[in-house]
Amino acid sequence: MCGFVGSVSNNSIEAGIQSALEIIRHRGPDANKYVIYKQKSKYVAFAHARLSIIDLSNAAIQPFESQCNQYSIIFNGEIYNYQEIRDELKCLGFTFYTDSDTEVLLAAWQQWGLEVLRRLIGMFAFAVLD
Image 1: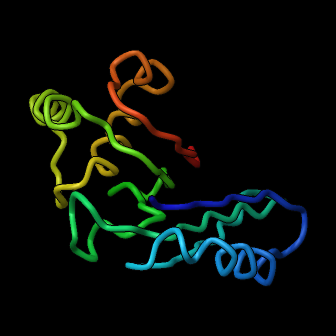
Image 2: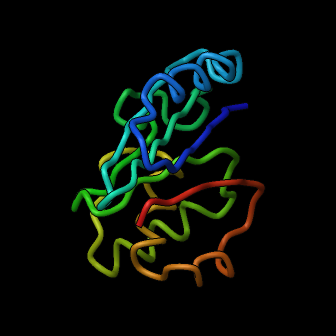
């Protein structure tokens, strides 16, 4: 099972997020990545330890960013109906570059915001930088 951590701080948090990622590294042996975003006067860090299950490609490594670069997500779990949601989003004009439920979840967040929770079937936890 993957693991993820996030942090918001007034100060640079690179050492702290690296340390946190090291602590959860055992949760995701396939890939580990962190990104620090500067948001006005704050630093937001997302880190993810990946256990690849659905899309094994490097294109699905998290934190996963939207094509417009406005959104970032860290996600763990499984969206059982992600293929149906993906088909609906394709009809709305979205294009997908991975086979991951993470990319579908982020696109669904872009389309419906918090209302996406009513559409999801599965077990999951996620954080979105919007």
